[in-house]
Image 1 (spheres, helix red, strand yellow):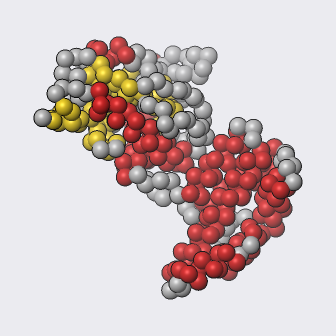
Image 2 (image 1 turned 135 degrees about the horizontal axis):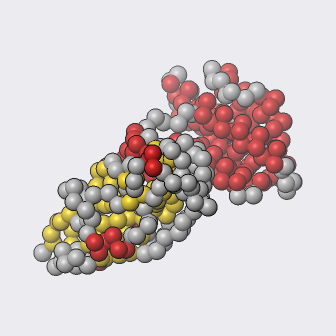
Image 3 (image 1 turned 90 degrees about the vertical axis):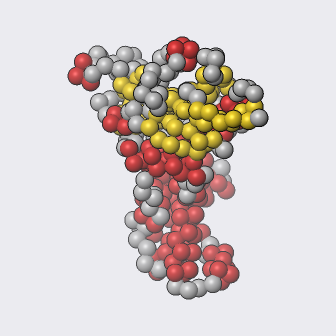
Length: 324
Protein backbone atom coordinates (compact mmCIF):
# COMPACT_ATOMS: atom_id res chain seq x y z
CA UNK A 1 0.00 0.00 0.00
CA UNK A 2 1.32 3.42 -0.92
CA UNK A 3 1.36 6.39 1.43
CA UNK A 4 1.96 10.12 1.20
CA UNK A 5 4.24 11.88 3.63
CA UNK A 6 6.19 15.14 3.80
CA UNK A 7 9.94 14.79 4.22
CA UNK A 8 12.71 17.33 4.93
CA UNK A 9 15.40 17.66 2.30
CA UNK A 10 17.78 19.82 0.31
CA UNK A 11 18.10 20.48 -3.42
CA UNK A 12 21.38 21.79 -4.78
CA UNK A 13 21.11 24.12 -7.76
CA UNK A 14 23.08 23.17 -10.91
CA UNK A 15 23.93 26.87 -11.15
CA UNK A 16 23.88 29.60 -8.48
CA UNK A 17 20.96 32.04 -8.69
CA UNK A 18 21.34 35.72 -7.65
CA UNK A 19 18.58 36.96 -5.35
CA UNK A 20 18.05 40.11 -3.34
CA UNK A 21 19.04 39.79 0.31
CA UNK A 22 15.42 40.46 1.31
CA UNK A 23 14.30 37.26 -0.44
CA UNK A 24 16.39 35.02 1.83
CA UNK A 25 14.38 32.71 4.06
CA UNK A 26 11.17 32.94 2.05
CA UNK A 27 9.21 29.78 1.27
CA UNK A 28 7.39 28.97 -1.97
CA UNK A 29 5.01 26.13 -2.82
CA UNK A 30 5.94 24.64 -6.20
CA UNK A 31 5.24 21.60 -8.36
CA UNK A 32 8.21 19.54 -9.56
CA UNK A 33 7.05 16.79 -11.88
CA UNK A 34 4.26 15.01 -10.00
CA UNK A 35 5.49 16.17 -6.61
CA UNK A 36 4.19 19.03 -4.46
CA UNK A 37 7.19 20.69 -2.81
CA UNK A 38 7.75 23.60 -0.44
CA UNK A 39 11.02 25.34 -1.34
CA UNK A 40 12.68 27.56 1.28
CA UNK A 41 15.62 29.81 0.47
CA UNK A 42 18.64 29.83 2.81
CA UNK A 43 19.27 32.58 5.35
CA UNK A 44 22.18 34.89 6.02
CA UNK A 45 24.79 33.93 8.59
CA UNK A 46 25.44 36.83 10.96
CA UNK A 47 24.41 40.46 10.79
CA UNK A 48 25.15 42.60 7.73
CA UNK A 49 26.78 45.36 9.78
CA UNK A 50 29.42 42.90 11.01
CA UNK A 51 30.33 41.75 7.53
CA UNK A 52 34.03 40.82 7.26
CA UNK A 53 36.11 41.78 4.22
CA UNK A 54 35.37 39.62 1.17
CA UNK A 55 37.56 36.60 0.53
CA UNK A 56 39.62 36.12 -2.64
CA UNK A 57 36.51 34.97 -4.52
CA UNK A 58 34.58 38.11 -3.59
CA UNK A 59 32.33 36.32 -1.09
CA UNK A 60 31.03 38.02 2.04
CA UNK A 61 28.77 36.23 4.52
CA UNK A 62 27.97 32.60 3.90
CA UNK A 63 24.37 31.51 3.57
CA UNK A 64 23.18 28.80 5.95
CA UNK A 65 20.29 26.37 6.15
CA UNK A 66 16.85 27.81 6.90
CA UNK A 67 14.43 26.16 9.34
CA UNK A 68 12.13 23.53 7.90
CA UNK A 69 8.44 24.18 7.24
CA UNK A 70 7.58 23.54 10.90
CA UNK A 71 10.09 26.11 12.10
CA UNK A 72 12.48 23.48 13.42
CA UNK A 73 16.11 23.05 12.40
CA UNK A 74 16.78 20.66 9.54
CA UNK A 75 17.85 17.16 10.63
CA UNK A 76 21.52 16.90 11.58
CA UNK A 77 22.04 14.05 9.12
CA UNK A 78 20.91 16.35 6.32
CA UNK A 79 23.03 19.27 7.48
CA UNK A 80 26.12 17.08 7.48
CA UNK A 81 25.63 16.42 3.76
CA UNK A 82 25.30 20.11 2.93
CA UNK A 83 27.93 21.92 4.98
CA UNK A 84 28.89 25.21 3.32
CA UNK A 85 26.66 24.39 0.32
CA UNK A 86 23.94 27.03 0.57
CA UNK A 87 25.60 30.00 -1.11
CA UNK A 88 27.02 33.37 -0.14
CA UNK A 89 26.42 37.11 -0.19
CA UNK A 90 28.43 38.78 -2.94
CA UNK A 91 27.46 42.43 -2.32
CA UNK A 92 25.26 44.23 0.17
CA UNK A 93 22.21 43.29 -1.96
CA UNK A 94 23.16 40.30 -4.11
CA UNK A 95 23.18 36.80 -2.62
CA UNK A 96 24.06 33.74 -4.69
CA UNK A 97 21.83 30.83 -3.72
CA UNK A 98 23.40 27.43 -4.40
CA UNK A 99 20.94 25.24 -2.51
CA UNK A 100 17.45 25.40 -1.03
CA UNK A 101 15.65 23.47 1.66
CA UNK A 102 12.83 21.36 0.26
CA UNK A 103 9.87 19.68 1.88
CA UNK A 104 8.34 17.36 -0.72
CA UNK A 105 5.22 15.29 -0.28
CA UNK A 106 6.31 11.88 -1.57
CA UNK A 107 4.23 8.84 -2.40
CA UNK A 108 6.07 5.59 -1.78
CA UNK A 109 5.58 1.88 -1.22
CA UNK A 110 6.60 0.12 2.03
CA UNK A 111 8.76 2.98 3.33
CA UNK A 112 10.99 2.83 0.23
CA UNK A 113 11.96 6.35 -0.80
CA UNK A 114 14.58 5.59 -3.44
CA UNK A 115 12.20 5.64 -6.40
CA UNK A 116 10.29 8.85 -5.55
CA UNK A 117 13.52 10.65 -4.59
CA UNK A 118 15.12 9.57 -7.86
CA UNK A 119 12.06 10.79 -9.77
CA UNK A 120 12.05 14.08 -7.87
CA UNK A 121 15.74 14.56 -8.58
CA UNK A 122 15.37 13.89 -12.29
CA UNK A 123 12.36 16.19 -12.62
CA UNK A 124 14.19 18.88 -10.63
CA UNK A 125 16.64 19.48 -13.49
CA UNK A 126 13.80 20.17 -15.92
CA UNK A 127 12.09 22.41 -13.37
CA UNK A 128 15.33 24.27 -12.64
CA UNK A 129 16.02 24.85 -16.33
CA UNK A 130 12.78 26.84 -16.70
CA UNK A 131 13.36 28.63 -13.39
CA UNK A 132 16.90 29.50 -14.49
CA UNK A 133 15.79 30.94 -17.83
CA UNK A 134 13.29 33.30 -16.22
CA UNK A 135 15.82 34.20 -13.51
CA UNK A 136 18.50 35.02 -16.09
CA UNK A 137 16.11 37.04 -18.24
CA UNK A 138 15.01 39.16 -15.27
CA UNK A 139 18.41 39.49 -13.58
CA UNK A 140 20.76 39.87 -16.55
CA UNK A 141 22.80 36.90 -15.31
CA UNK A 142 24.57 35.10 -18.18
CA UNK A 143 23.02 31.67 -18.59
CA UNK A 144 25.39 28.71 -18.66
CA UNK A 145 24.27 25.36 -19.96
CA UNK A 146 24.21 22.07 -18.07
CA UNK A 147 23.27 18.52 -18.90
CA UNK A 148 19.47 18.21 -18.52
CA UNK A 149 19.68 14.40 -18.47
CA UNK A 150 22.02 14.15 -15.50
CA UNK A 151 20.40 13.34 -12.14
CA UNK A 152 20.16 16.38 -9.89
CA UNK A 153 21.44 16.64 -6.34
CA UNK A 154 18.44 16.04 -4.12
CA UNK A 155 18.75 14.74 -0.56
CA UNK A 156 15.81 13.67 1.61
CA UNK A 157 15.77 12.32 5.17
CA UNK A 158 13.50 9.30 5.69
CA UNK A 159 11.56 8.32 8.82
CA UNK A 160 14.58 6.47 10.20
CA UNK A 161 16.81 9.54 9.91
CA UNK A 162 18.76 8.18 6.94
CA UNK A 163 19.63 10.40 3.99
CA UNK A 164 18.34 9.24 0.60
CA UNK A 165 20.21 11.06 -2.18
CA UNK A 166 20.32 11.36 -5.92
CA UNK A 167 23.23 12.52 -8.01
CA UNK A 168 26.08 15.06 -8.17
CA UNK A 169 26.05 18.68 -9.31
CA UNK A 170 28.23 21.19 -11.14
CA UNK A 171 28.90 24.78 -10.09
CA UNK A 172 29.59 28.13 -11.72
CA UNK A 173 29.55 31.74 -10.58
CA UNK A 174 28.93 34.91 -12.59
CA UNK A 175 28.82 38.30 -10.92
CA UNK A 176 26.96 41.61 -11.12
CA UNK A 177 23.46 40.68 -12.22
CA UNK A 178 20.36 42.41 -10.91
CA UNK A 179 19.26 40.34 -7.91
CA UNK A 180 15.81 38.79 -8.17
CA UNK A 181 13.17 40.33 -5.94
CA UNK A 182 10.46 38.38 -4.17
CA UNK A 183 7.95 38.61 -7.02
CA UNK A 184 10.54 37.48 -9.56
CA UNK A 185 11.66 34.47 -7.50
CA UNK A 186 8.03 33.49 -6.97
CA UNK A 187 7.20 34.12 -10.63
CA UNK A 188 10.11 32.04 -11.91
CA UNK A 189 9.20 29.18 -9.56
CA UNK A 190 5.53 29.37 -10.56
CA UNK A 191 6.38 29.29 -14.26
CA UNK A 192 8.77 26.38 -13.72
CA UNK A 193 5.99 24.53 -11.89
CA UNK A 194 3.55 25.22 -14.74
CA UNK A 195 6.11 24.32 -17.42
CA UNK A 196 5.81 27.83 -18.89
CA UNK A 197 8.94 28.29 -20.97
CA UNK A 198 10.64 31.61 -21.55
CA UNK A 199 9.38 33.14 -24.84
CA UNK A 200 11.64 31.90 -27.67
CA UNK A 201 12.94 35.33 -28.64
CA UNK A 202 14.10 35.98 -25.07
CA UNK A 203 15.55 32.46 -24.82
CA UNK A 204 17.52 33.00 -28.03
CA UNK A 205 18.68 36.39 -26.79
CA UNK A 206 20.09 34.66 -23.68
CA UNK A 207 21.93 32.25 -25.96
CA UNK A 208 23.43 35.18 -27.87
CA UNK A 209 24.72 36.74 -24.65
CA UNK A 210 26.06 33.37 -23.50
CA UNK A 211 27.92 33.00 -26.81
CA UNK A 212 29.26 36.55 -26.51
CA UNK A 213 30.82 35.96 -23.08
CA UNK A 214 31.88 32.46 -24.11
CA UNK A 215 34.14 33.72 -26.93
CA UNK A 216 31.86 32.42 -29.71
CA UNK A 217 31.39 35.61 -31.76
CA UNK A 218 29.87 34.03 -34.87
CA UNK A 219 27.24 32.19 -32.83
CA UNK A 220 26.56 35.36 -30.84
CA UNK A 221 25.65 37.48 -33.87
CA UNK A 222 23.67 34.67 -35.52
CA UNK A 223 21.64 34.10 -32.34
CA UNK A 224 21.17 37.85 -31.90
CA UNK A 225 19.71 38.15 -35.40
CA UNK A 226 17.52 35.08 -34.86
CA UNK A 227 16.12 36.57 -31.66
CA UNK A 228 15.15 39.72 -33.57
CA UNK A 229 13.56 37.71 -36.39
CA UNK A 230 11.46 35.71 -33.92
CA UNK A 231 10.42 38.85 -32.04
CA UNK A 232 9.45 40.72 -35.20
CA UNK A 233 7.64 37.72 -36.65
CA UNK A 234 5.69 37.34 -33.42
CA UNK A 235 4.78 41.02 -33.38
CA UNK A 236 3.52 40.89 -36.97
CA UNK A 237 1.45 37.79 -36.21
CA UNK A 238 -0.14 39.35 -33.13
CA UNK A 239 -0.92 42.63 -34.88
CA UNK A 240 -2.48 41.02 -37.94
CA UNK A 241 -4.45 38.59 -35.79
CA UNK A 242 -5.83 41.49 -33.73
CA UNK A 243 -7.05 43.04 -36.99
CA UNK A 244 -9.06 39.95 -37.88
CA UNK A 245 -6.74 38.53 -40.52
CA UNK A 246 -6.76 34.75 -40.86
CA UNK A 247 -3.90 32.53 -39.74
CA UNK A 248 -3.21 31.05 -43.20
CA UNK A 249 -2.83 34.50 -44.76
CA UNK A 250 -0.57 35.61 -41.90
CA UNK A 251 1.63 32.57 -42.49
CA UNK A 252 2.01 33.55 -46.14
CA UNK A 253 2.86 37.12 -45.17
CA UNK A 254 5.57 35.96 -42.76
CA UNK A 255 7.00 33.58 -45.37
CA UNK A 256 7.05 36.37 -47.94
CA UNK A 257 8.93 38.82 -45.74
CA UNK A 258 12.59 38.19 -46.49
CA UNK A 259 15.25 39.21 -43.99
CA UNK A 260 15.63 41.52 -41.05
CA UNK A 261 15.28 44.70 -43.08
CA UNK A 262 11.88 43.80 -44.51
CA UNK A 263 10.69 42.56 -41.12
CA UNK A 264 11.72 45.90 -39.64
CA UNK A 265 9.80 47.78 -42.35
CA UNK A 266 6.62 45.77 -41.86
CA UNK A 267 6.78 46.09 -38.07
CA UNK A 268 7.09 49.86 -38.26
CA UNK A 269 4.24 50.03 -40.78
CA UNK A 270 2.10 48.15 -38.25
CA UNK A 271 2.93 50.66 -35.53
CA UNK A 272 5.94 49.16 -33.76
CA UNK A 273 8.85 51.19 -32.45
CA UNK A 274 11.80 48.75 -32.50
CA UNK A 275 14.11 51.27 -30.85
CA UNK A 276 16.83 50.72 -33.49
CA UNK A 277 16.80 52.43 -36.88
CA UNK A 278 16.64 50.41 -40.07
CA UNK A 279 20.07 51.69 -41.12
CA UNK A 280 21.71 50.61 -37.86
CA UNK A 281 19.94 47.27 -38.00
CA UNK A 282 21.27 46.66 -41.50
CA UNK A 283 24.83 47.82 -40.92
CA UNK A 284 25.43 46.53 -37.40
CA UNK A 285 23.34 43.36 -37.20
CA UNK A 286 22.00 42.06 -40.53
CA UNK A 287 25.23 42.50 -42.49
CA UNK A 288 27.39 41.26 -39.62
CA UNK A 289 25.19 38.17 -39.25
CA UNK A 290 25.26 37.45 -42.98
CA UNK A 291 29.05 37.65 -43.14
CA UNK A 292 29.38 35.41 -40.10
CA UNK A 293 26.78 32.87 -41.20
CA UNK A 294 27.48 32.69 -44.93
CA UNK A 295 31.10 33.75 -45.35
CA UNK A 296 32.52 32.43 -42.09
CA UNK A 297 33.83 35.86 -41.10
CA UNK A 298 34.68 36.18 -37.41
CA UNK A 299 33.05 39.38 -36.08
CA UNK A 300 35.09 41.80 -34.01
CA UNK A 301 34.28 42.32 -30.34
CA UNK A 302 32.77 45.73 -31.17
CA UNK A 303 30.54 44.13 -33.80
CA UNK A 304 29.42 41.40 -31.41
CA UNK A 305 28.63 43.88 -28.67
CA UNK A 306 26.67 46.16 -31.01
CA UNK A 307 24.75 43.22 -32.50
CA UNK A 308 23.75 41.87 -29.09
CA UNK A 309 22.86 45.33 -27.78
CA UNK A 310 20.65 46.09 -30.79
CA UNK A 311 18.99 42.68 -30.51
CA UNK A 312 18.23 43.25 -26.82
CA UNK A 313 16.77 46.68 -27.55
CA UNK A 314 14.50 45.38 -30.31
CA UNK A 315 13.36 42.22 -28.50
CA UNK A 316 12.48 44.10 -25.31
CA UNK A 317 10.77 46.90 -27.26
CA UNK A 318 8.62 44.68 -29.47
CA UNK A 319 7.98 41.77 -27.09
CA UNK A 320 8.56 43.04 -23.54
CA UNK A 321 9.54 40.43 -21.01
CA UNK A 322 6.46 39.35 -19.01
CA UNK A 323 6.19 40.82 -15.55
CA UNK A 324 6.88 38.57 -12.59
